[in-house]
Length: 134
Image 1 (cartoon, one colour):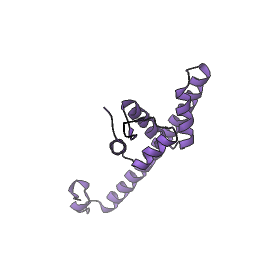
Image 2 (cartoon, helix red, strand yellow; image 1 turned 90 degrees about the vertical axis):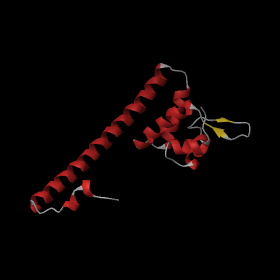
Image 3 (cartoon, helix red, strand yellow; image 1 turned 60 degrees about the vertical axis):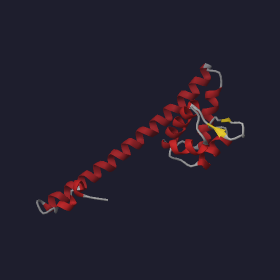
Image 4 (cartoon, one colour; image 1 turned 180 degrees about the vertical axis):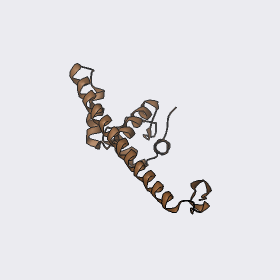
């Protein structure tokens, strides 16, 4: 299956501009159709999943490009070690973000408990998220 720039951007909840930028700098592979329009296949989707994960870890685009370029090279010991180090660093960044998110959630849980204790039995039904409507 192939996807247009618009379809691909929608799949990954990003903009068409971002997809074009990634292809222009050689970060995201694409093919061209008869009208010279970018088209994306499952291989490109796999790359985009990786790009999304690396971006979510806070990796700069220039570092993503370096990783992508390494992935295009022959799998030598040196190349594999370089790729390993890049991914290990980003894994650590991902774990740090998880720890920060957990600390934030714990803070909110404690704050809610604090107010529940103060209000002890005086919390109206409209404070229960189950009763909220958008």
